[in-house]
Length: 478
Image 1 (spheres, one colour):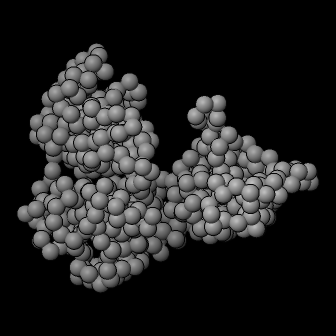
Image 2: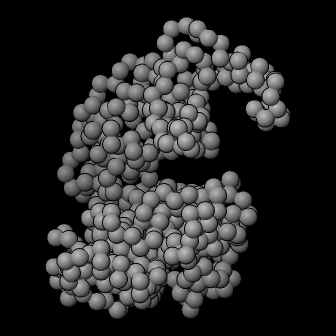
Image 3: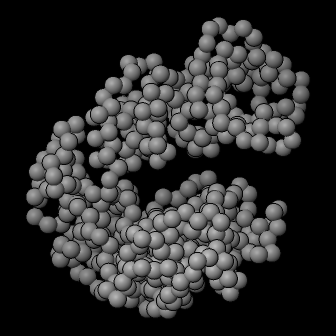
């Protein structure tokens, strides 16, 4: 068995998630639980220390046996490391401040279930009770008992609305009636902060898509991530691109491979343009505020799904307090309706004609394969070329897959609500009984040349071109 374990003492027991590796070996994927039982019977540390001293190949040349014993004993005593080990993967731990993460959990264990916190992971919501019980046991604290209250608070923190027309649960603290809606004092304070910062004199809006004709060549463009930077280069390809949260571990050589080597660090007090503002979460806007921009031109759309909680760009539009420029909305006008009993065969036929094809559907289609894949470091969706080999995977959008990048999953079929990737030449929307006209319109906005709508039972003559409005505290109205 190969992999990483936090403690090497003989009295530490583990429950592990394993995957087959080379030969008869297994690889440790995750530590699902760990506990200390009784006294140390066999001093494994001394055995490993002797191996480090005697074999140069056993460890890095600068790593000593004394350093190993010191770190192993510190790990054995660290409650923070134990808690984070059972919650997060090894790759997450490598980039994590373990003590800071543990302090956040220790302050309020429910933070594990709140998407607005750094310690949250969506997988925790699948088994919230099991997750919290596991952590409290490792922390040796009083068992958690307020499960009814937790369910109400998690439901509030995980929804996309920031207010409710009905009174909130009594388990949610600091409830207040505001703007004719029910919300919390913390949401009101956050809205007031946005109102104080984003004013008609320092922000203007463009409703639509960024195009070369609307963007000055010397513009400073601020994007959320490297994928947005790549999208910008595909759509406009000029201006100084700055990333809101650069990832220090990504080298310049890696940025060259990704096609975004010219991305720069955002400086303070700049006039900036923010494309895809409707994707920006409250956390993104808070991060931008720290750079004190002198003026912001926010470009966004109402006809694509917003991401995260709230809808700040939509709230600015609906307040009618800001200068708004209506501009071109990118979307294909070539839509073909198709009826078929063999979805897999139809998709394969279209894929042979058009090399880059993205399918959209709320139903899972595991047999559909358009060579679209999810990649990580950073996360993005790309298309594998037909002539690729297992040890040399080439792509249409990039040259090839370079280590440590790896394929996460087949991304040939994606729910339209969650797609934020590049506009593709050809799209296929596979309909079901719940498909709406707005879903089809959003798919059009992600296609450059053509969209096939398969087995549609929806009337498309009254295409809705606005996302359903969320219930929010609007910072920009009195």
